Length: 283
Length: 331
Ligand SMILES: Nc1ncnc2c1ncn2[C@@H]1O[C@H](COP(=O)(O)OP(=O)(O)OP(=O)(O)O)[C@@H](O)[C@H]1O
Ligand SMILES: [Mg+2]
Image (cartoon, rainbow over all chains, first blue to last red; front, side):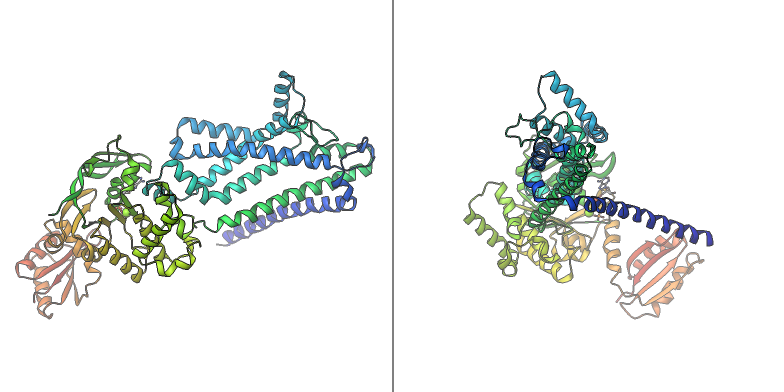
């Protein structure tokens, strides 16, 4: 009896400890960034593109990186979305029937999920070299789409699985086809979850540096076509931190604040928009 | 008997090889209410789902035989199942509104079958909501989520939604088991009204409900059809012992027991004698429950009592050794 009570309290302490570690590290990360970044954050940083020699402490801002990152992540997410939604629907029983091919697809996605992003970058670089292409927005978008694909697809698949079987049965019993059921009932019920999947993937896309280092390149200008190289926030942070000048290093933290704000803003807006549809969901 | 609407012919169904339906052959009459009764797990839902082939969605299911609706075999792979399903409305056990507004729930079916004009859809929505007695309650909030309705209202909405595709048959799987008594009564009244126009098949656990509604009864037991026939015949004079036990057994919950005797440890004929003495002390029409553990008594006591003109309401095994016999004194 005594031993069981001791076990119980030891376990409790462990749980509280892990909770504290999680919350603590989150607060520590955000705190550090804000503490170091906020003082140097200026209007110039978000309204001006980098001037020549920005990384040596010259003037200008990182608008080129902000816009570049938005282009890259938005493009990558949209591209990944169209691929993911198809794969996720296919992986449902009604379509694939739980065949070998669907299991193989799942396995491949899981392996891709675990693949470090530098590997994606290196792969993209090799392919682009082969075709004699220079680093470009398009290259970055494609690589990011592949990076986001496994996360998005697996998240969506899990969400689709949670759609109650009864709902599908209702739709079929009314004489709907599989496609009608999928598009008009299943995706409506799953919408908030699908959006979360997209958001998580977007978050990974906009925050990744390694995969776009060689594929999207880096430049001081805002890209005007898909074939221009483009700057990005993660790389801006990376390069700024890597300079010898302490002022420029500080700006890296300010850039991180901007990145954080973008991710938060997009997450909040999406949630707000999706609320309009979630009210119909059957619990 | 009236015209046959659904002819079930030698249907067998297996879940991953385990038989759930064995050689079911029965004709379901047109524009009548047919009740499928039987204990839990006997295959009622399986049989119902065969009729619109929703059973196809289940993993590991195999089935054989024929189900003819309007001379079309719906088990035939060549049959257009979409059209078959359109002929049948389904009312499930748990009210299941679609994730849409009240209006869209009704309009969903007609829309996928090609009705696009708003005015036509408006007419349909009003017509079927009125038919199930929901129109007055919801006409001011047609665009609010269907999930906000009460459970009873949701079930009526589901009925209206099924009717909106203009089926000929309504399949119900325990449609009132999740509802309160008033809502259940409401649904039952709807079904009675609808049987003038539709063939209705209802799975129910509730024998009283079956008695109130059914014109025709099918009794399933462990995947077999042990009895079927017009409701009054089956209920008043069941031919099969298992049907009698089932009908009596479910009645028993309502029966007031006036006296209980325990004759455990006694052999025949002593337990029979004790029971007769106990009955003697009761008024006409009162009931006696006796507990026995002598295997011979389980069959002989009921037989003897019936010979004396008493009514044996039920014989049930309570545990490995004990049986319970409920007898109503003649009167
Ligand atoms: N998806 C399934 N996989 C495997 N076995 C199943 C499945 N569904 C039902 N069964 C089995 O088939 C038999 C018949 O099931 P069914 O659901 O038709 O019974 P039921 O008469 O509707 O029971 P209830 O009154 O409890 O709803 C049961 O023994 C059940 O365990
Ligand atoms: Mg059932």
